[in-house]
Amino acid sequence: MEENNPPELSIVIPVYNEEDMIRTAVEGLVGGLDAIGRSYEIVLAENGSSDATATLAEELGQRFDRVRMRQTSEPNYGRALRDGILDAHGDIVVCEEIDLCDLDFLSRALQLLDDNEVDLVVGSKAMEGADDGRPLSRRAGTRAINLLLRWTLGFRGTDTHGLKAFRRNAVAPVARTCVAEKDLFASELVIRAEREGLAVCEIPVSVREKRPPTVGLLRRVPGVMTHLAKLIIAIRVQK
Image 1 (cartoon, rainbow, N blue to C red):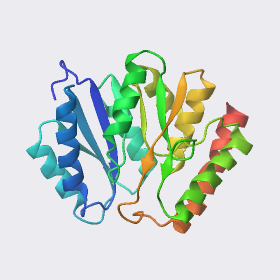
Image 2: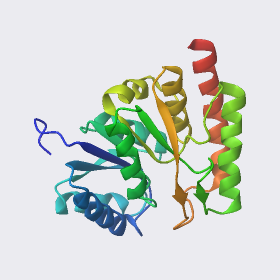
Image 3: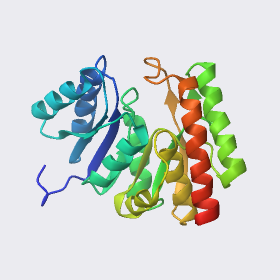
Image 4: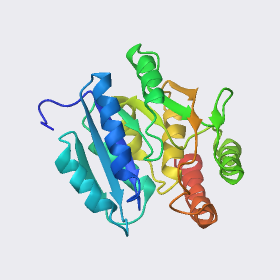
């Protein structure tokens, strides 16, 4: 992608141990984005995979000139997402998930952003009108973390993790101030955007689990609580 001819859209996708689906997912996403008719790049934010994900991502970058890989050395979803956002070239950045690649969300979010109504659009799995078809444990996990964010940080929405689309010039400076990593980076980004007075809105999304999470829910809990404590200190105490 030529630096003097940046794309309109940057699709940032953290990938970790996704060798079974990365090729099919990216091929489908490229086809869908080509049909939209806007210039774009896909940034595969690989982070510490122990399988063939990095090799496949590199091959996809060679095959499609609008696909590129950037790497984070350790398994760290939040750091990979943050670095991908800050490395994006598009005026609009879309944070996607490799097992979603939701073009319907993209279409609805772009309409809101094109109309200059909002700075950040969050795809909510928990608001009215959403269709969350994931297992009960994952749905409960989403609601539990959102309840914690409401109690501790005054979060006003219904979801922070997953699909997002935003104006890079408005939200990238917020991303630079974030201190949380792993699962809590996405939450901090939305909460700080709210607190900075950016226009944030949620739209309902439909979600189906295409494969089990690459990191189990119970294994994530200690890290989530540690980063939540750091986030509370950073926002409530240090400000």
